[in-house]
Amino acid sequence: MNRKRSNGPSAHPKTRIDVTTVRTRWATFAVAATSKGIASIFPTRGTAITAARASRDPALGRRIRAGAELVFHPASGTYPQSLSRATAALRAYASGRARRLPPLDLDGTPFQLKVWERLCAIPAGKTISYGELAASIGRPSAARAVGAAVGANPVPILVPCHRVKGVNGSLTGFGLGLPMKKALLTYEGRKEA
Image (cartoon, rainbow, N blue to C red):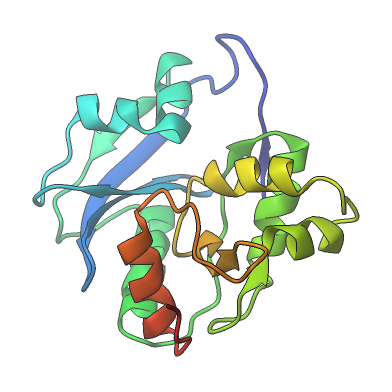
């Protein structure tokens, strides 16, 4: 994971963010990537994405306010390499083809980056609790902080925050909604109530 958050107008100077949409079995998602890797994935209505909608995404909004340039691409076409890798990874996941996660360019604190990195190690079809996730990063008493970091994940599905559940095994908190979380886990072969 490449980026640590820094505050101020020079946090992302002259960063170009390429954005397109990818339609999956669950929803249509906006996919954003910098030259370094995937920066954000978020659901959108329809097949077009606007600058106003992109700026409401927390991960992209910080970068836009810091002066990043958004470049929109049609849903089908030729993309810069990092965006092409990002869209291919989401399409591969949605079609059931295992694929190595392409480079990420995530904007977060060192703690968030550590949590997101650990999320990437949870195999498809497996789940762990927030407490187990906290213990796995050496912070067993930080389950709530881990939950907040999981909730701030800018690349859901590919950085699989849907694989984290409540301490009692229940499905809790998912930015894309609990029905989507259940659908993703069922898709991965995990039966969840």
